[in-house]
Image (cartoon, rainbow, N blue to C red; front, side, top):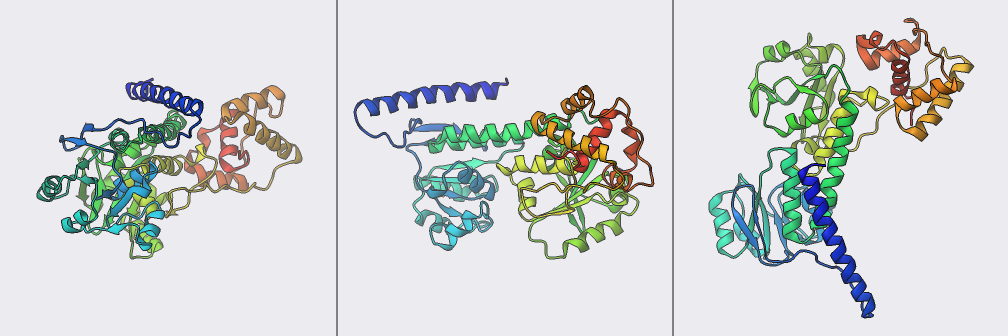
Amino acid sequence: MDGLSNHILGETMEKKVCLLTLLMVGILLGGYVGVVNAQNFPVTVVDDAGRTVTIESEPQRIVSLAPSNTEILFALGLGSRVVGVTPWCDYPPEVKDLVEEGNITVVGVMPTNIELIISLEPDLVLAYTLMDWENLQTLEDMGIPVLVLDPATIDDVYDDILMVGKVTGVYDNAVSLVEQMQTMINNVEKKVENVQEKVKVAHMCWLEPIWVSGSGTFINNVIEKAGGVNVFSDVSGSVMVSPETIIQKNPDIIVYTSVGLQTNPSEVRSQIKEMFPTVNAVKNDKVYLLLDDAANMLERPGPGLADGVETLAKIFYPQLYGGYMPKIITERKVTISYYAIGEGYSEHQLKALTEAKNLLKIEGDVREAYEKLLKTGVISSEIPSIPKDSPTYTMLIQLYGENLERYPTIEGRVQLLYAMGLLKI
């Protein structure tokens, strides 16, 4: 268990014991214990700008000056305390509803409408590093604490969530949220860790000119967590490159993200294919568009990054998830599509598949299911090659490309069947 986990576990256990004690006292006194605040105020933290910030009392009126900050606040259950957001704060969908109902005010950003923010009487402003420092000082001179969030990695996002939870009195919620994200990402990393050949990935967010993501970006961090290799990890930040550079890098997969795309998505995919006809991603139809909210989950340093890691892993290695991903994705939660059972299977084979499916439901692991299948005689120790003129072989080629012949073993065949949806859990 790492240091962060130990730190979280220790504080969580102390708080749970404290809460339980207070609840027992309340019951013994015949009273009702409602919301118990385990956080003592004032609270002093060091924000991402290196500033020491003290919060005198638990904030009740919070202004968020970044969409990622807003997502963190709502994920921590603090939506009812948010009184101001930016025009780009659109997740969760509840934010838009609260704005339309007049419960949340949209404040301008770049430039920041300081007068409007002050009129909302906030007791905490969650800012970002691009905020004008003169405006930040103005808010603090008015007695309004400002906390600057500027995470550079997923681990930094964890730290920021814990910091926000601490200064708002909901640290336990923050611990739970971080643990959920860590579990989700750890599960992905375990699933892809045994992949022998990692896919090479290029992320683009613009085509004219071409902008790609290098090292030091959230996209790069997410690509690596999902088991991919960023072909532009040798450059820092987001950079412009030529079409020739893309061709030279020859990525296996191209991921294009955009929020508010004005062009037909299919036309964008066609444009990419026309620009890079010799690239493996184009030749194998591995060009994916993540638009709107799907793009936000990758580009915003907030809770959505965990969904982003899982989504990219499903794009990179669909065989590990039992299906294939759509080429155009607009939502954070994407359902894997499954191939239908192909023709050419005997009754014995279909019976074996049904048996294997039931075993997988129980075990939830392809390797263990494979071993059980062998032990129970559901499959033999040898599985013949799939004829290249069969519909099944065609579907496998669509899923695995020309690497199909690299799966000659029994376990490999079971993996293939599982990936096609024949052994869908």
